[in-house]
Image 1: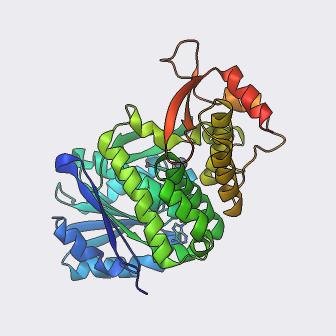
Image 2: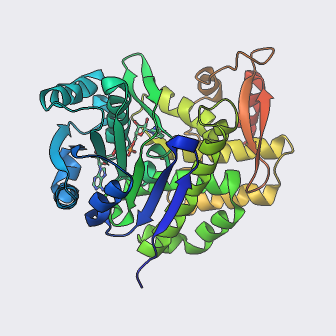
Image 3: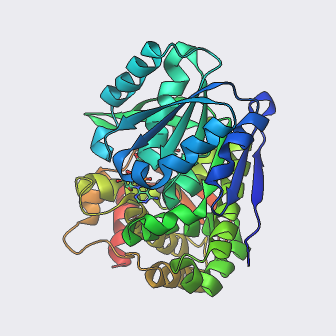
Length: 364
Ligand SMILES: NC(=O)c1ccc[n+]([C@@H]2O[C@H](COP(=O)([O-])OP(=O)(O)OC[C@H]3O[C@@H](n4cnc5c(N)ncnc54)[C@H](O)[C@@H]3O)[C@@H](O)[C@H]2O)c1
Ligand SMILES: [Zn+2]
C-alpha cells in the first residue's frame, strides 16, 4: 500500500507555508519549490552523513526543475552548531553572489536546519529557505515554526532569530538510515504531542507502536503529519512564544535541566524529555490535574518505546531543580510548570523550586 501524501498548512498570513509529508518524495522537491514561487539559485546545505545518502536525488530534482544549484557542507554534530558554521555559509553565498531571490535548502537534522535557517534569516537581511528534515526530531519539531539559531559557548541556542521557511518537505523513508536510538529519541516528541493536544494520536501510538518502531511508512506518515499539524496550529496562534507556544515545552523543564546537569553527554534530547514527561505527569497527578490511569498510560508508552522514564539514581532532584529556569514574572521565584490534564490537554502551574524537589523525591 502506498501511503498517502499529507499536506499541512502553517497559517501565518503572508508568511504561510506548507508542510508536505510523504514517502520517497525527494525527487519531487524541485517542482514543489517552483510551485512555492522560489527562484533560480539554490544552495543545498547538508552534512557528510546525509550527503552520501540523499544529496543526489535532491540536487537532481532541483536541477531538473531549473534551479542553478550549489552544495555547502557543514561538519556534522551539535558541537558545530555555532557562528563558524554560519560564517562558512555566508562566505559561500557571497562568493557565489547569492541575491535576495536565492534560496537555501537545509537537508539534514536539527543542527543543519537551525544553522541554515539562521544563515537565511540574516544573509541580506533575510532570504528564503526550505527545510528537508532527515531526523524524526527535525521532522516533527525543529523544521516547523521558524526558530533558527546557534549555540554560544556559554549556552545552547543563545543566538538566533525567528524566520519561517517557505516549505517543509518531509520524506519518512529517510528515517531508515537513522540510528535506531535517534529514531526512538524523536518519538518522545511525538508522544509529547499526543499528551499535550491529541488523545487520538496518543491512542494510535499505543496501538501501533510496533509498526512505528519497524518504520512502517504509512504509520510514520500518519504520526509525523499529526505531530506537524499540532505544532503548526500552536505556531499559527503564537508564533513568537508569548504564551501558548510554551505548551510545546511539556516535559522540557525537567528534561533540559537533566541534559544540562549531565553535560549533554548521557542523554539524547528526546531521552531527557521522555524522563521529563513522566516526571511532569507524576507531578500533575500530585497537583490534582491528572488522573492516575493517564499517568500510567504515559509511563507505559514511554517505556514500551524504549525510552527512559526515571531520573537516574545518582542525580539528586535538588541539583536538578537548581538547573531549572526560574520564572521572573511570578512572585517568589516560582517555576512555570506545564501540567497535563489527563491525555490531550495541559495547564500552566507555578511551583516553588522546593515543591518540585519534594514532588520529584516522592515519585522515586
Ligand atoms: N528550531 C527548533 O525549533 C528546534 C526544536 C528542537 C530542536 N532543535 C535543535 O535540533 C538539534 C538536534 O537535531 P537532531 O536531533 O536532528 O540532531 P542532528 O541534526 O545532530 O542529527 C543527528 C545525527 O544524525 C545524522 N543524520 C541526520 N539524518 C540522518 C539520516 N536520515 N540517516 C542517517 N544519519 C542522519 C546527522 O548527521 C547527525 O550526526 C539541536 O541543536 C536542537 O537545539 C531545534
Ligand atoms: Zn524537545
